[in-house]
Length: 116
Image 1 (tube, rainbow, N blue to C red):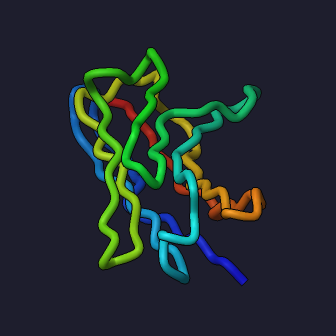
Image 2: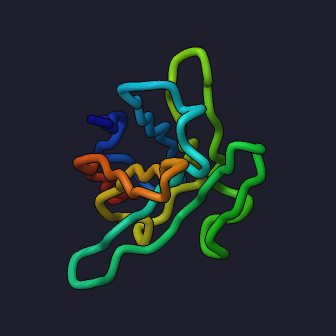
């Protein structure tokens, strides 16, 4: 059973930074894509950033230049470095992984609140 466990969320002032971590229970080489999504109250879950096994990355237009996704294969962990945070970044952030069998896996989510 694959488990994804997020950490690193919290309350931060506008302009601040946070780094989210997502630790997988097994090797991340088992996944073809890993990514981060967010969901604000009353809104649908949206892609924030993703990285393929070939290390290609994609970002939502709203976070380009501010967020960076990366992986540490030795730690089976994917990160989301978030800089220059804005109040509109406030949401629950979910880690996602797509297995080589095309199965989707999700973490439990971590709350990010950007407020003064």
